[in-house]
Length: 281
Length: 291
Image 1: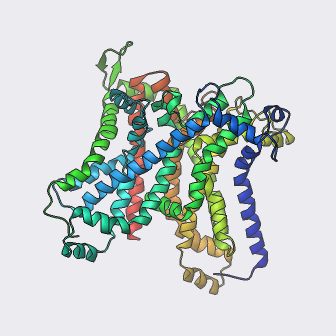
Image 2: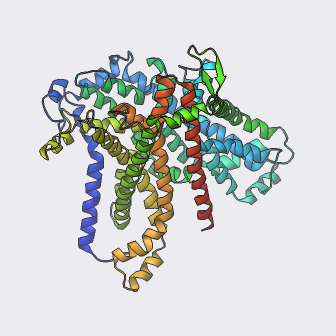
Image 3: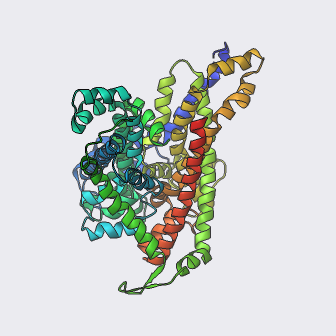
């Protein structure tokens, strides 16, 4: 509903722009600081505008091993990508099959199976971190991509959402497919998957962000720098030295770390909002 | 719903991957946690002995545990309160505008994509004792800022970084909630002579209260688990435990001090806490579906 209140309208825009600036400031300052030399940063307040050392800082991180870590930022970002994609694709794949079985088949213990999966919603990996480490170590999976990914896909968020979306598919669709003589796999491939595209995209966005931004589990599961992710490597740059941290490198690394997930959230805004409101409710 | 009845084997084949992963990486560790909570390991990690509730008694009797509990509760209240008020304000504003609504939404939701670890580092940079922009602003007001020395400032740092991140999450939900409020209701109130403020208090706010309750629980869960990364990158739980949350303590006792019995007991207590939160959430969800 609209009223002609030009003053209130202007105030609204003013406050929103203020909000956008305040919320953008931390990333802006990291961006500008990452383009200065270490010496320039040490001589006073963090600069509000760009310097001329940007290329050098980013190039140093990407091409040379990071001090105290032994691998380059390129490797860290690649590890993050493997982990994020592994979690997103892995979680969607196993959840898709499980939700399909629960919705479209009748078999003994169906409800029990659903609850066994469903109860995982209650306990995030942080709660059972010590014994999970023990189990993963027993399988010799510490310091492997599988060990970093598998415990994080043992959760029901995606199964739950896909189950809801499958149950809302029109009943006539199923009848028609049956008349056509479609078996379970053809029904899944030709009917269910094409109709669930939006939900799958939304899930992918949420799971990719979740995977990329993981901290505690990869910190433990990736013992060696070869498997470290971008997010967990930052601590090395900020906390390792007693003197002033090399902020020009830390901020450059932070910018590179946030770029992929921020790009995903902006490019897929529609799916992101849908995924967020659907997975959590 | 009609189903594929003749297939006996296929559903199990489809369920197998998820059931296997859940069994190995969820139920096994969870059961392990439960069992360990009642045992004590000897000094060499070779043997263990059943001790009943002794681990729980030890945890409950330690002042460190209650300090972590009060830090967590205070942290949750501050983050939930701050992030929800800010988000509500911005969502109401964004809901009002006709031009640029979509752009505002993108520009206010992107912080959600940032890892809590990175959020901590970005704010630590702004509050750096030497070159932080905000440190210098505060110095202008006569405040000497060094989060490594002052417990209150350390907590403020992680609270602000968390609010920054959670605001965008809350914003998405409040905006969705606002857009679902029927305009006819607001119009009727306007015809009755209610001004914008009266309409907000009388109609918008009550209709948003389920969303607000949902966000309160989600923000608490966020503080419980996700802020581990923020803390581990900035204050490391200090100074003097001022930012040591329950999960941070669990990590320290389990992986740094290697006190398996105590950390397992803490895990179990945390499970109960999260279980209670989830239960409350579902009770609320049920009511909401009927509504």
